[in-house]
Image (cartoon, rainbow, N blue to C red; front, side):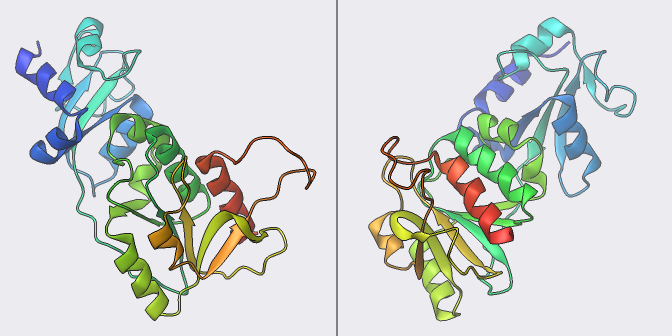
Length: 247
């Protein structure tokens, strides 16, 4: 039987400050939890499973709970068959490079968008995402779920973007941002490496970051003179931009 304190701890971890205090985040569902358990780089502090979990036979040290208890533990609408409390990994800020394609997020605040962007980065072989401090926390429950395990393969870090992008400029690393004034991305000559900067859902890339952008790109609508939505969702725009770079 799980204790009231255990339930309270899991629920507290929905809050960023509590995650930092306990150095833990929550992962839910057999697929995601199974990947974390199999990855030796990640430390599982506690593991809760129902008897119907696919992991029950391979995780002998797990705490077996009833479906009712799992409903009290979960942060999701529907109770999963497994929940893990996982240690927050240590992340270092990557060095900008002309040989590697990276993503940079400037105040992307919607957790669902961030999770989708991390999953997209994984699909296109992008291993590093550097975020402004005001970007959503990548270990928030909704973000973790939306990544579908991509968070294990894509390193997300947070820092002062102006300092990091200035470092990139000093190294001659190309930096790109999607704007309404940029050149047509389908016609632009893109470099193999560099930094793709995506901005806030409502305001786009901030002025202090935009000053450090070496090239601006525009994703055109179809037909070109169409009048409709003002802009694309940032996660969709990220996917289109990554596709053009990899193509």
